[in-house]
Amino acid sequence: MHAVTPETTALVDMVLDYAHRRILGEQSPLDKPMTPSELRRLASGSISETGIGGRRALALFENVLAPACITTDHPRYLSFIPSAPTKAATAFDLIVSATAVYGGSWMEGSGAVFAENEVLDWLGREFGLPEGSGGVFVQGGTIGNLSALVAARDHRARALAAAGRPRPARWIIVGSAEAHSSIAAAARVMDVDVVAVPVGDSGMLTGEQVRPVLEQHGEAVIAVVATGGSTNFGIVDDIASIAALKSAHDFWLHVDGAYGLAAALDPASRHRFAGVEAADSLIVDPHKWLFTPFDACALLYRDPEIGRLAHTQHAEYLDALTGASDWNPSDFSVQLTRRARGLPLWFSLATFGAEAYRAAIGASIDLAHAIAADIAERPYLRLVRDPQLSVVVFEREGWEPVDYAAWSAGLLEEQRAFVVPSSHAGRTNARFAIVNPLTTLDDLTGILDSMA
Ligand SMILES: *Cc1c(COP(=O)(O)O)cnc(C)c1O
Image (tube, rainbow, N blue to C red):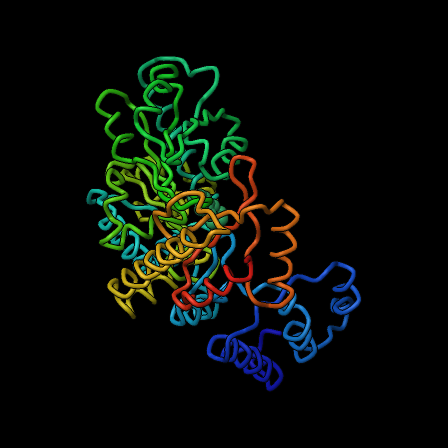
């Protein structure tokens, strides 16, 4: 299994050939899920004492298992948040595996950690964080948010202890009622409470709405979470007005930009993120709108030392690492062993340059606004909110939830598009999330036509 033999050589060639075809061949179809019983019938029995051999296993993947996975980088995959990795990022992901880099410590992975940190530094500068900010690439936004909020609580707990004051009975996280579900999930893991502040029609959380919560709960507040591009609507909270409360209140500002903060790279949208430079921590997911394969989240701390204090694991077998003053990525989040998952972004960014990223992100925002204008002109459709970034939400007049469901299933059945229904305030709607530069206006108008 481990030696280089004619057999393992053939196996590697076969796998790389498949990857080559998938990355560079004609567009993979959208594909669709199969039922467990279909898959049991078509794909059971691959695990045995003697093995079925690489050729059969790969054929099983190519012919049965892969077609039972929706193609998330398809230009007409428009649900949730699609993926749209660059060719460079996807190809380099193979190298991350091939080189067996350990990304958790400087001692083991200094070159990789250096390159990842170059990217984190660059992101920090783009968002206006001060010199010395830093962090780590983690698996996804959920772990990024959790890690940041744990650091925020640790920081507050240490401050209270240093001042000889007791901890509050319950810790509190403040966020918008439209914040991502991962904030509530983090709160459950941490066993803390969430104050979900209702937002008006605009969908934007503002400092005015946050102020009374800070006045009421004071130092029990671990953090205020501002969303930099909500997942449902792509709406950016009024971060500047929330940040302005820092002059009167002592709180940790976390910006959840898993999907949307990438848009701050687009000069035309940068203004929407005013105030992000005051963040104590922030996240942005490269696997969403920075064009890398799954899975990666960039987590940045204004003062990384706070993250390190909160997260460093201590163990005898780790003393050789934690005793040194090195920059060990594992020290900044809820994880130890880590893939150098920032490297595909590093390679792609180094290859194509930031300008290509700005242009690609800006183009998706322009496309979202163009299709929103088209929707507004169709009498049978109604925009739920004007888009800010690249999410467009709209209703079909007269449709019930079953109509949306049937239409959505039909689109996938015909392999035309993947657009699942969403909802807002109890009303079902349709939603486009656009991050793929290969998505065209024609793709989108074709889908609107299918709702006439
Ligand atoms: C997607 C998303 C998350 C969660 O990120 P994962 O990478 O899916 O864990 C958190 N917040 C926002 C705003 C998101 O869009």
